Image (cartoon, rainbow, N blue to C red; front, side):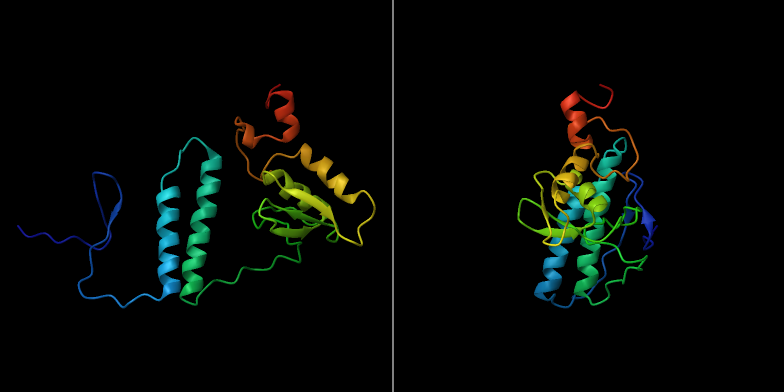
Length: 184
C-alpha cells in the first residue's frame, strides 16, 4: 500500500505536525532573511518546549517567539501594525494593562545603557522587572522623582501583570527577597 502523508498530518510518536518537503529549489535568501531565519531557529530551540508548571517559562517563551516572528515578518515586509490603545510612555510594557499616571519623568537604563523614558508608574514596574537597571530623573522632573521611583520598584514584583505562583527569587520583589520569600 502506498500512503502519502497529508500536509498537516500529526506524528503519533511525538505529537508534532509532519510537514512534507516541497520538491524543487528554493530561492536564495537575502542576508536579512537568513539572519531572521537564524534568530527564529534559535528562539524555537530555546523556547520551543517549556515547563508547563511554570507560568514564567510561558511568558519568556511567548516573548522570545513573538520577537522571532516579528523579525521574520519585518524581513518580508509585512510586519503587523499594533493597535493603539491610547498614548502610553515608552516604559509601558505592551502586555501591561495599566494606564500611565502622568507624563514621562524618568529614564530607566539597563545594563547595556539602553533606556526608556517613562511615567513614574511604568518606570517603577520596568525597574522592578529588569535586573541591574538604573533610574535617572529627566531634566524637568520634580526633585526626588528618581528616588521615589526607585523606592516604589523595591516592593514591586517583576512583570506584576503576570498572575501565577512566585517561588523563585527572580519572581519576587527585592523587598520580598530581603524578607526571605513570598510567605515570610
